[in-house]
Amino acid sequence: MAEPITLADDGSLVVPDEPIVPFIEGDGTGVDIWPAARAVLDAAAARHGHRVGWTEVLAGEKAYRETGEWLPTETVEAFRRYRVGIKGPLTTPVGGGIRSLNVALRQILDLYVCLRPVRWFRGVPSPVRHPERIDMVVFRENIEDVYAGFELAEGSAEAKKLLEYLADELGWELRSDSGIGLKPISITGSKRLQRAALDYAIARGRRSVTLVHKGNIMKFTEGAFKAWGYELVAEEYDGRAVGWDDCGGDSGERVLVKDVIADAFLQQILTRPDEYDVIATTNLNGDYISDALAAQVGGIGIAPGANVNGVTGHGVFEATHGTAPRYAGLDKVNPGSLILSGVLMFEHLGWHDAADDIVAALEATIAEGVVTYDFARLMDGATEVRTSEFAAAIVERL
Ligand code: NAP
Image (cartoon, rainbow, N blue to C red; front, side):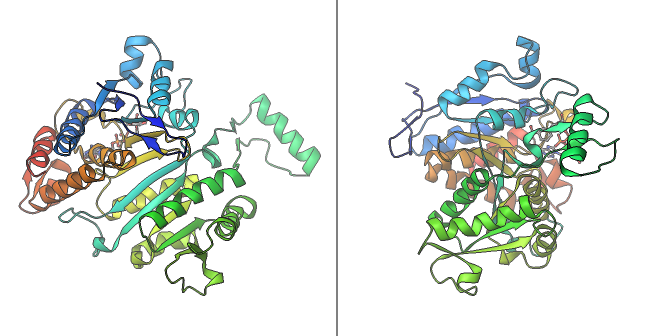
């Protein structure tokens, strides 16, 4: 019988034989990729004696049609109660009360880590010459920064009031026709994200953690993020990680912690990507970096994403692309992003055997040239298959 996942006293997840896992099918192509992903996940789990107790919850257009709400309270409560869930892409309601359902879920459940592993799969068409040199795991802070939602529209009474305050109290003369947004970056928010990246690097035997920031310009937000990262290493990671300045770049067995300015980083991931491993960065930088890296490995259609709170164990695993509405219901698009998000979910549950199987089977399928339209149009001699056929091909190779 399906049971909820709980949290042990030591903070680890207690995963029953058949955990209850809520899923959001997703809008647009969600109807195509969700059943495909589920078929692969179920088959891989079964091979190792696991079973997922899927339970559907509503969000997005389907929820709006059936309940009049874009993100019903029951959906948020299901994710809160059952801790771990997965979602297809959701339409961002234009002009509605919620800016983005994805951002709302992250904020409500305090999913402060956005985890994006980026690696190349043999056979995937890539715009760079050596995609195999890219193997990074991006930890993007998910709650703060300009995403926190503190924005005032140009001309609004609130913006005028804030402009007056800034002029009167701080002597900051901003243009009167400005829209204004705040960029909060806290010690708490930065260090918990950096801690997650460091713990991951140590647990997985990775070489380095790089703090990516724009601290040369934004000293008290981005620059502070960098400083707090090194402070954290000195405070909590003695013998396990070390800052570059404290070891001259020779960290021995310890994880090396270094930093780089965001624009230089975006150059270097093209010129010498093998110097980077685990990345810890602020929210907006992380947004750009994740997509730039995914593009380099040809993986926009298959890049997975996880939103996690490492303390409560909550995790929402999601396709990183959108709803691609013009392909909805055509059984055409690539389900790889949602399948690999499911792999991250299995890893979060400790089902590493099933997760590894899926990665190997997906890699074999692509390497044999069995791919959906998006890859087929870039590959010579590929066999183009439908969404459901691609999933079946992976299941066959498990
Ligand atoms: P999109 O849905 O990601 O689609 C843009 C293009 O990306 C598609 O036309 C297609 O390119 C390619 N693509 C997307 N998914 C694919 C897949 N599974 N397989 C292969 N190719 C795929 O972006 P959008 O059109 O800007 O956004 C549509 C809606 O999605 C909006 O409402 C947006 O807010 C929402 N959105 C949701 C999320 C999320 O839920 N995580 C993320 C982003 C956007 P080609 O046509 O060139 O083949």
